Amino acid sequence: MGCAQLIITTNDTPANAGTTARSNLIAGNYNRFTIPAKATVTAYWPSSLTNAGQARPRPAANSPERGLFLDAEYQQVHDFFAARPHRQPTPLRDLPGLAKTLGIGRLMVKDETGRFGLNAFKLLGASFAIETLQAEGALSSGATVVCASEGNHGRAVARAAREAGCQARVYMAADAAQARVDAIAGEGAIVVRVDGSYDDAVRKVSADATTHGWTVVSDTSWNGYERIPRLIMLGYTHMMEEVAEVSDVVFVQGGVGGLLCGVASWCARHAPERAVVSVEPTSAACLLASARAGRPTAVTGPLTTAMAGLRNREVSPLAFESVRSTVKAYLAVDDVWAHDAIRVLAQPANGDPAIAAGASGAAALAGLLAVTRDSSMDELRDGLGLNSDARVLVLVSEGVTDPDLWNDVTGETLGGAPDPHGGPGGIGAERGSR
Image 1 (cartoon, rainbow, N blue to C red):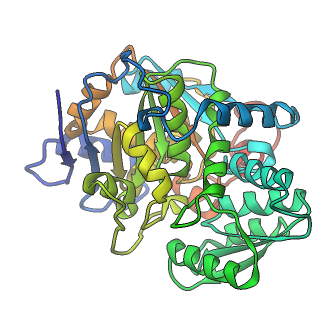
Image 2 (cartoon, helix red, strand yellow):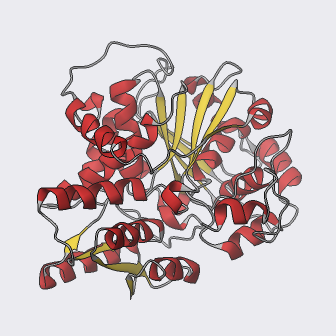
Image 3 (cartoon, rainbow, N blue to C red):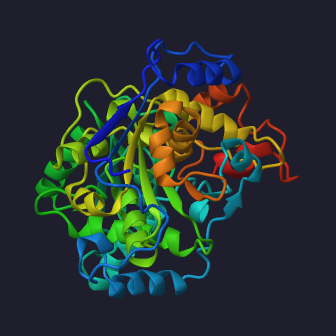
């Protein structure tokens, strides 16, 4: 197929090839909401996809195509979690009903909605980084650690700091959802609201940390600040070590690129035949824009998305330099797809397990839904080999962090839905409220 520098954008216009499919999708799934006149999915891939899912020669051990980390670093993170057996793996859930509906062979969901007692994957990186710094003598008990966050990273840093005997300050955008603010404060952290976006909060954190001598614990890198983001992303790779099942394609949340880099690096070194696909909100597709430009590129315009954890204008340079060589394709999806993914997870058909996920947590599945349901994505679907034999892994990276949004999207009340696993309290009590 050999698609170099190819961009596909779907718009709901009469001339669009995907109009009929999108109209049918909306008619079947969006009776509770007013859908924008233009609901889009955009795809970009920088090279041929003809080898997706097929074995290929392994590059040299230190090649960028093998990911950011070396074997010794993977051993380090393995030993770290092996020494802490109380930190149990999160479940891998099969969704055979949805797989059949989407026309793929198998759909597996790595369910991060209950990671180490929190409702997102972020504690993998935060705990590994903070405890590693303490073991090295670079962080002492009673020190103050700071970070910028849209919610999940801040809560993870606050928890890891508290467990390490440190203080935490978390900087958030002024319009961050109150439920996310309350969750972070509940971990004992001081929350500082910053006028502007997440990226503005990152800059404020850096300035204040320099002034006061605090330690920044961020998965976003910048010039002169790379060691701790690297540790955090290395911690994220443990998620993939927990997945024993084989997959052909992995859909991953984009954001600044931290989780994407960790997952894509692990795959590049341990399973290079797997195709990794990045998924971002349309209004915050900084990874797609950067991949297209060949350099870190900030996106402009209002960050109007419910996928709050992916609401970033700028990539992490350290992560981006790595994913340029390890990610097969980049997707940007509108919230309409994320809302559909939330509903599909919360209200499954054909006996699939129910999962209460936030908009960012459901974003990777939103990308899979868009590729398999929108006919303008047929070339990408074929290139990725998303057929009846395909084994697909999707990351659900967070539980419900904004209950009001989840209630509006599903038409249910969090905690009041029937519990598919037989326990009390429904879906929200089991996962989303952690």
